[in-house]
Image (cartoon, rainbow, N blue to C red; front, top):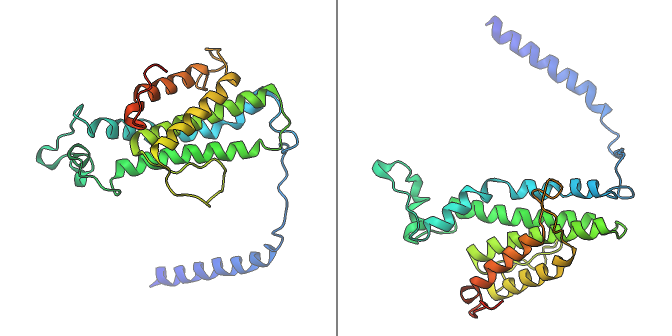
Length: 238
């Protein structure tokens, strides 16, 4: 009984203190103060690289490894994940990929889709931040790297889902319908060919983890090798 009364008293004290402080929370239009503003960031090569960090964080999330590997392999005759005695069955999350009976509710597909389009959206968001930044060699190279990362994410989406939305402007929700796979193929190819001149050929600590010309060429090679499946036309000579 004493414990019950004590809890009531403590609750009353907490509510009273909250009532005292609430009237003080009235100044809601305080502008955040930061040393970094659109007028001075990014300007240096290091700042441009730092600004792209969220893109690689999004790309390195779970879907980049496990779910992509599972979807790519379990849906073919390359691998099978058996569920002996019910272990690893997980509601058919894996077996339906192998049996080609999966639906849009499959967790692996859901994670793969979220991974791809969160990377694409993050690329669009960072690109939007650069719109008012003065032109420079660092800006041109960084934009080329961002668009190459976006093209890479689109390649994974096209390869796994076929028809997907093409979104290049952050916050644009006017056209979220899917585009034909052939159109997505052309978009990726056009993007990569346009960015290659501004990508680096340096391979080392200074470019580690960032797109170079060689990544762009590697994506194009994969696309051309599988063009017959993607667009119905062989592109082996390319």
